[in-house]
Image (cartoon, rainbow, N blue to C red; front, side, top):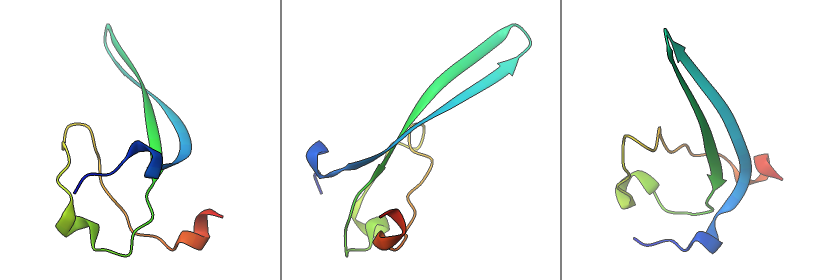
Length: 63
């Protein structure tokens, strides 16, 4: 299933930082909302290294 970027609703950016000895990893996680009545776990395959998960929530929770 292909989704247009225009179908996504941005919820913002989460800043993250991991510090290990001499290594500092700073990342920005872009969080989006996609409205669907379908079971998304059956329809999508995502890159596990880049996507930590998909959760289901009532749409009204984000209004």
